[in-house]
Image (spheres, rainbow, N blue to C red):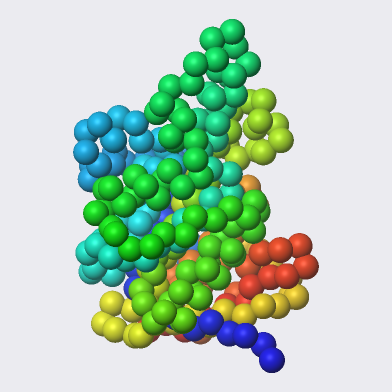
Length: 266
């Protein structure tokens, strides 16, 4: 018997090359405005105390920016909100800097570099900024990271009957790692899920496993973005939500397994 996960989306955050936020991105995803690639500009993490703000890396700033947009759109506070962080790599620039130090004569790694190197560092900064005391899951599934995060978040929504926010984010590696993992910029999507429809719900989704081929964009720029960033594998879902009609989308997940999502506007 096929397993289906049902939930409602209350808020969306989007930041990446050519995208500054969710409201301005809807016209692009609907084809009403052309997609114009441009470097991602991440806002300063004003919620963090000054000391943590100075130490915050791009992956911390990115997750804060997208999650706070999604939470605000849902009309919620940040406290006691279960969360799922899904990163395909982690903090690439910090990893590069540590590798440089370890390859040099002076191998003294700063405490800030070290504590930012752990995969759940962004979750820690996020909990400090939002004063959130609820549980966090931190995942990494390489190119399948968006799908893995989506399944984790929806499982919590369905089983625990609770709201949950998903933050899927990618940050770049400098050379020489870039040659092996060519992610060139910052890109992130945040989705605020709830088990029950309310006045803030914008779409209902029903997720199942499929072997069908993943949806692709007709626009070559959007398709290049979808392929280049694991977090951007979720863009076809956002396009379906922006179009505000009933639609089935298929997202990349594993090599021979993908996610079918029935999207219905609220």
